[in-house]
Length: 189
Image (cartoon, rainbow, N blue to C red; front, top):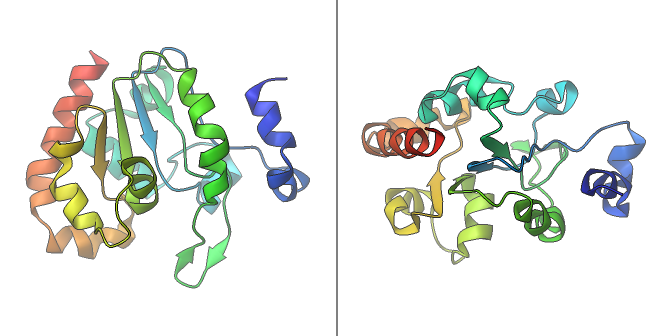
């Protein structure tokens, strides 16, 4: 049985499998770059195309890659903290289920022996992979992104909901985005 089939038949995913949903992720043995974000949004779950929204457009811009490169180069993998849309919460989507990353991420990452960089998008991925203290802020983590290189590159979620954060922190687009583009271009060459 493939890992994909194991995920589909895992009891923790039974409610999603019963809805006819498929786990949303993309791994490839040739991947050089891995993007770890939160969980698929409602549109992504419906279309089964990762980063298929305004957030994805901004992410590709920040990375300096085209849709063709992002989706078809086999050099970019995507592994959300949860493989399914978690549903609506009070102020946005519910958080990803931690058990998904704990159970499946290590196995899936092992299938990608050529990874050079993991882009960690948002607080959930950053706290899990960087083992940050509970009191750490996403702003401080991203401002100190160089401390996590060469393995990890933490960034803010590219959602339009973060426009206020981006306006309050102009250094991100001035300093961090160009550094991200440089790393991505180096890796994808």
